[in-house]
Length: 142
Image 1 (cartoon, rainbow, N blue to C red):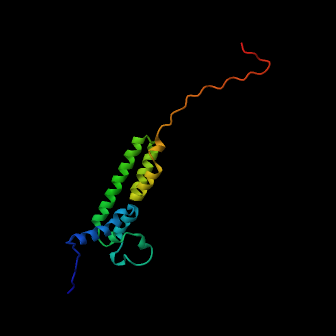
Image 2: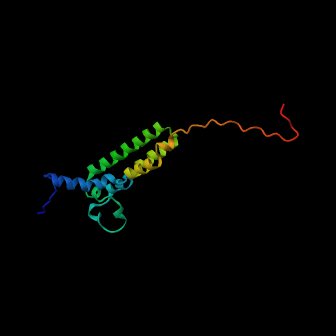
Image 3: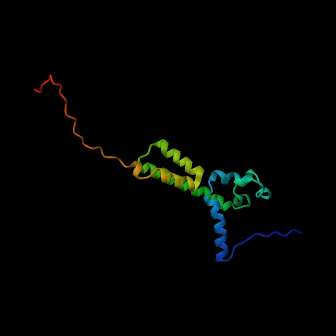
């Protein structure tokens, strides 16, 4: 007979620990979290390239993965809307949207650091007077 035990948090401090563990999955880029679906759970902690995968998703935290992808889509939409409001070109808007979708919250923070509001403010042109004409010694003004 084989006994199976699944952890079910009941108290507030247990839920706090569960949310703390799942927050690492939420902050991970979706590009590295999605391949974790296909990794074998029994080999999740072996050394090698599998360490780049998300151990929470590999061991069964599918809900955290769904929240991760929804967070990436929300931040991507926010970046797309914000750059449109600032007047950025379509190519720049699509670039940052794709970067945030693939890179997650870290890419969104980079987007906010690079594409500041100040960078897109119009600079007023200064009204300058044309330079006076210089006349050679043999030319006289009329």
